[in-house]
Image (cartoon, rainbow, N blue to C red; front, side, top):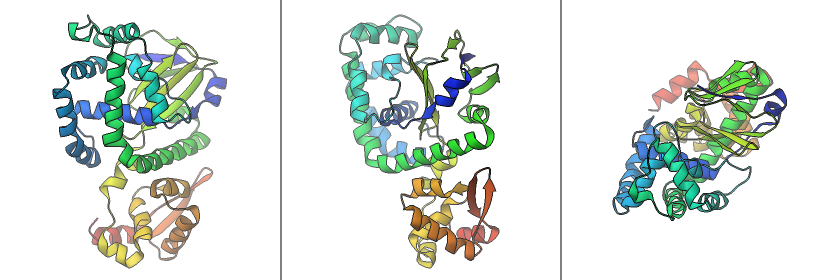
Length: 321
């Protein structure tokens, strides 16, 4: 297993960061795999996989680069620069493009765990990788980025609440398969075998993405990142549960949308992030739903979570959701 030595101060200073580039690379991994983890991903693949495969069929070198870079156990490091707080996609992809050609080839040798194919012994690999990431961003991520960002923001809210309620160990245990707090200041980051890394005193960020994937990255000994899939209910529910016409007519589409989302407990802040509605609007919808007995609230630590009651479940199910 791979693990990092993390002291209490480093963990206390760590933070959550949203990254358009990480979201784009996660989407590239999903396209490469071609298999969705839930109906939302499968719908997305049906829409975008044909264009992606046509692009690679017309550009065999880039196709070979993708297969080499997304190795079985290791991703070529130049493809995943450690996300920076507030960094735009353009700024992130510029760092991919700026990788030195010899560095890119060396990283590919590691991801392949073998010799570099002759077709990749060239100097334009960083430019090709950047161009492919730009395609994935422009064609498959950017049109939906506002919604994705709200889902990611909601996940950060949920994780922050979990830190305050249960501590960092609970959060680290739940990030993705293979991550767990081992005790003794040791954080297991994946199941791969490589030497432990001492990261105490470094900058540590946690980066959610909507596809069900993840990885780790670092730059020297100064900056480390753990990319993880955001909470499944947040990543998939918004796509999977459209508001039924009848329910929208009865309650109003915005209020009905809140009721549909509350199939799993969510806080007001999460609802604001996922729906894009203002705090006041979400609060009014919750008050009406509470008064009607369709949702209930309960305290979890310092947070108040809302969820559908049995009556709310019956109404949503009867409406055809």
